[in-house]
Amino acid sequence: MNLYRDVLAPGLFRMSPDRSHAMAHAALRRAAPWRLLAAAATLRVDDPRLVTRFAGVELPNPVGLAAGFDKDAELIAALSCLGFGFVCVGSIMPEPRVGNPFPRLVRRRGTESIADSMGVPSKGRAYATERLRRLGPRAVPVIANIGGFSADAIAAGVIEVAPYVDLVELSLMCPNVLADGEVFDEIGMLRGVLARLDGRAGSIVVRVPNDTTRLHDRFAELIEVCIAAGVGGIKVGGGRRIAEPGLGTGAGTLHGREIFDTALMNVERAAGFARGRLAIKGNGGISSAADVLAMRRAGASCVDLYSAFIYQGWTIARDINRALAPIWKPAQAAAGSPAGEPKRQGCV
Image (tube, rainbow, N blue to C red; front, top):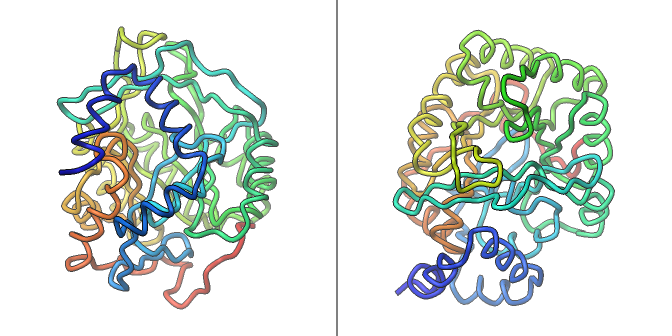
């Protein structure tokens, strides 16, 4: 019997997704119980076969927790106990934001998928940076996803947060805050951010906007911009906009198993464009060792997940890594990140 899936999840799933999300946050605010659980359940899989490099950082395993769950860097100590190879926090926004109206989450339990329209709620960069500063030694690598609505705002966020994390992930746009028909120049924004960082791009991961992956030439151009600037890596997913009357905004972004095939295809396309010159992190519907291995074969060095954490609980990283260890073969280091490169202690 699985404590989470068989006992706790049925009760949590009788609540609204927003309420159960808040309860999960409350439960993870104290790390001590999770350290005990991690020891008792052997949540961390220490196996040298799983050690992976991504964007110059050594990861204990290739399975991370994606941005979106811990938006304000409040839960890192507890989340770091759960066996993930890295934890991604954010999006960290320049100023506090309320976000979109509730409901913001809708479950699709039959396919272990989630529709969301969060609207990037945030307590602001100052709050999150202070949380990161006080964290001290990191149990696993931490990636901070930085958002904003201008190149100046995103670049300032990178500079402020970078000393306290291993990598910074740029979120160039959020589809849930764009008006219908609005056009966004994500490549122009990316060029502007990189110009303001003055060549300090090696510890930056660029999250490829989902809309960009649907445009062949834009996708290829964005990757070439990243390579030319010496960006450490990219994150590629498969989320898509859907109409969802259960959300407060009436529409949102779909995540989870329903988008896995699209995400896998996008990773393969990104690898084709990059041709070994750029490290790739895959995201979208990953819930098993077979999924991680498929992403690896498509060209990803590592992956991060979110929906599977909600549906399968705190053992998800352990379960994947136990099955993955005998069959995992890390990617060759991308150009600019030789296998012998020492692990970064900061970001820029």
